[in-house]
Image 1: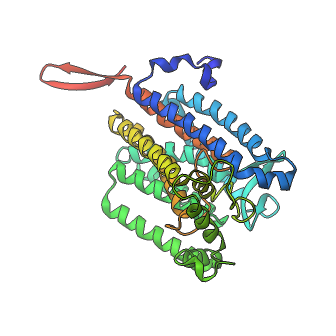
Image 2: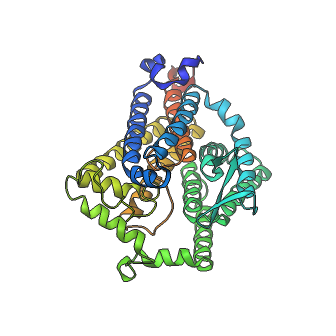
Image 3: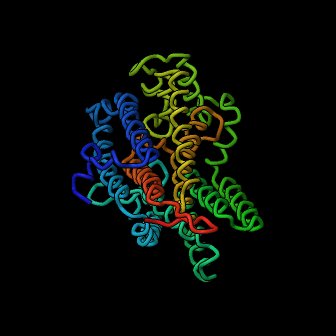
Length: 390
């Protein structure tokens, strides 16, 4: 791989890629560009007042995007077999970092949650960075479920459970639920026995209910989202302001940069509720176009998964689709009051270097699957047809 291939706009090899890979690449870059534009508008007023620099958040997002694009192109040009060989180390190292965040004085606490580590002033969020490695390792384990020994199965099930427990303890119920659902769906796509999947789903629901019961703020969120207008000044405040932003957008929106809710009415408008600001400025039409982009992205990802010759590659594509498109739909559901208020970022859009790096790495894995699909050919032998990898 040449150095210039790490820079997306100087990668001349793209012209020889299969159609699905090229489409996913351009859709990813379009999604990223849109996200930077939306973040600029959503974050400018708060950044200007809080830091005296309206571009404060955008500058840091650009740094994260640059790092993410290098990782993105590295993965696009790296054989999945090589990446899979180191995926388990990524999961284990980041699992250790997740538990480090739980240690008082080591983990950085922000608004009651201890999800970050500070390294030379740079905040690292292991629960975000683990996502691409989780996709790889879960695909590797579940894709070869019937070929690996029972002790290896048990080991990785324990590792996955510890990861979910560590993220839940931070506390971060939304990311725990997302990672848990992703693992479950990958296992389902791999064809694991239904009675095991049903039992795991029931256990997950039990854990979620227990967590909500033991954490009053989570219970308040679940109750308030059903009717936030009961207490619009306290428990329902975030959702009420988000709904006001979405509703104020009307058909065509207030116009780029003209959101009123971002002027210190809607909290954390640059992360957890950034879709509400987008909907206010670009209206119903803008929201539909964003949903259309997600549908197209999901459709191509599904085509890539169906064309995958290797079951592990197929599961990687499915996992990537879940974390990019599925997480986006959950974020939109929260902003529109369809789902309880959670802290899930909108991929490529919400502020956060860890999130944008992880999202670009996941997109890179998906495109790599599409590229490796094109490296197969069908060889017809007398009496039967087989496929082999070139």
